[in-house]
Amino acid sequence: MIHPTDYRYNVDELEEYLSPAALLRYMLHVECAYINALAKQGVCSSKIAKEYEKAASKVTFQRVQQLEAKLKHDIKAIVEALKEQVSPEAKPFCHLGLTSYDTVVNAHAMVLKDVTAKLILPALVETMNQLIQIALQHKSTVQIGRTHGQHAEPTTFGYSMANYIERLGMGIWRIKLAAETFGGKIGGAVGTRASLGLLANAAKIETETLKLLNLTQINAPTQITNQEELANYYSQLLLSFGTLADLANDFRQLQRTEIAEISEGTTERQVGSSTMPQKRNPIGWENIVSHYKATLPRLITAYLNLISEHQRDLTDSAANRYLLAEILNSFLYSTRRCSSLLKRLEVDSQRMRKNLQSNATFELAEPAYILLARSGVANAHEVIKRIAQQAHQRGILFREALLSNETFRRCFRSLPSEQQQLFEDSSKYIGRAVLATEAVCRYWKQKLKVFRST
Image (cartoon, rainbow, N blue to C red; front, side, top):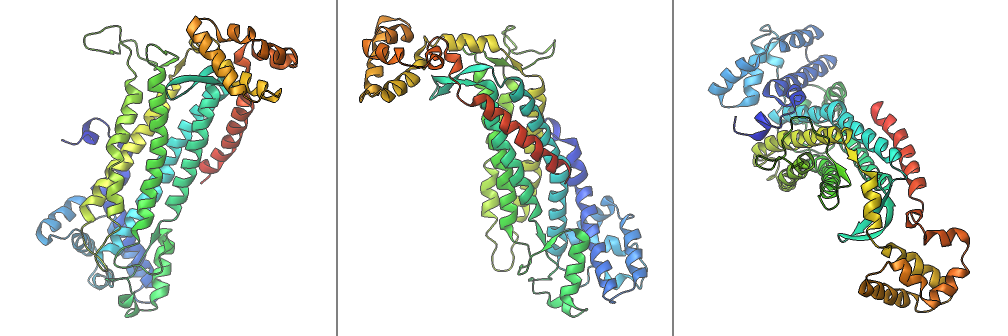
């Protein structure tokens, strides 16, 4: 075992879909669906179709490996292993009129649809549920906002979570749509269906086969299906992966000693450093960022795979094997880890307020300049900027410098009491943060029901 997904990051459930034995089952399903379609068109009997369905359960991966070692062709090995299990009269119909990639591309499309519906979407929904719970719990927990690494204006921790909820929610929606667009093809060597036409009505054979596989039809394929849909699917995964990585990086920064607004929940015996016993490192969040860094370049390969010489070449074959395993495993592993970390997240609301208070009330500069401008002062921004500079130079609270300025005092006296209170407690300067958080959570709670029902 030399690959990290083998011994450190492996998602066990993916074995059911991505292991060689699992892929064999999907390809056998394609072969059987095709023979069922032939039977419906009278090319062979329904008895033969049923015979193949029973035979498929007897084909073993070990036998296919033995045959492939001799034949040097993976799909031909599957065909021969399947033919070994049927009667002489059934043998001629196995893979008749198909090309290898009629089997492969349809099997891969089914794998991706199943993995998306049964593993990826549920994992993302679970992460979303954790984010919604945190957002609602902390919708009013005031936190200093940060832009360019500097203190900006107050926000709430719940509202910052609402941003990620909205982004990840749209990402889930795009992944679902991308998986639904996967099409299939039963078209023969170069996609023209000429081989099918020698057997019966080509259109009916293909339509019936794809119906049994629950795949939509690609109208003008080559030997393979159009690679844009696969590249789009991986793109959507990586977009959502980027959202998770952004969240992870934000949380990693918020755990810095000088910020310390959140922390990862740890087990009693967990060690942060081999030499510094006091350490409590954000290793979980860092791991998600690290996985994103490792996986993102794979997207380039997916786009390079759009190039296939004429009707087909094999320059994408090995590459697609890596993409299928690594992108799905890394994304699913990181999504689940994010959900687990969110369940154990520790939020220090007192530290958030302390960090806000450490800003020496400079967060009042924005409302001060806006209210001053509304009172008719043409150069309000410049006036407030000078007051801020004076406060910095004198080492005093910005509020103190502000209220000692005659121009601002005149404006302040004319303000309604609600606006005056902002300058006593800037934590009230959070706009629609609470209402927006509630609205976002309410909307995506409803949307998640759709993901669960599909």
